[in-house]
Length: 132
Image (cartoon, rainbow, N blue to C red; front, top):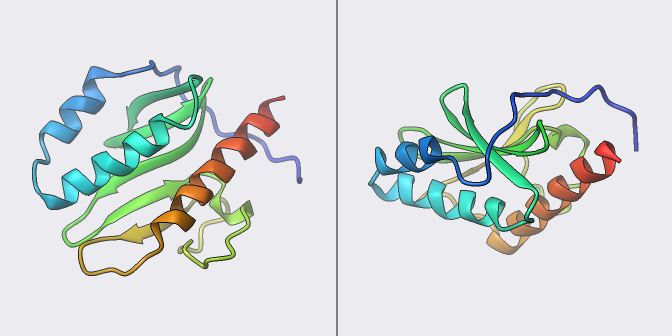
């Protein structure tokens, strides 16, 4: 594992009411998809904290973000803060950022939900390891 300088945010909380309000403001199909995937992220561990950063829900361990979700016109992105460094055998990850990458999903976009869950677990474990 390469030693990366970790991007840090202010400390989140275990269940941020602002995150719930963000989802409540998006009651359509894409908002529901984003909420479903953020709930998967929340469930990764008791140490997952959350906050709104750059206008979307972000999940952190301590103050280090590892995943987010955001809603667009016809799809959602599940963002991975160190996605460029993660193994991706299912080729779900998109983007060209130095570290940040995303998985694009939507009603008309075919993807493997099991592979995305695995990728989220790997992203979570990766940040935990980098913090230790």
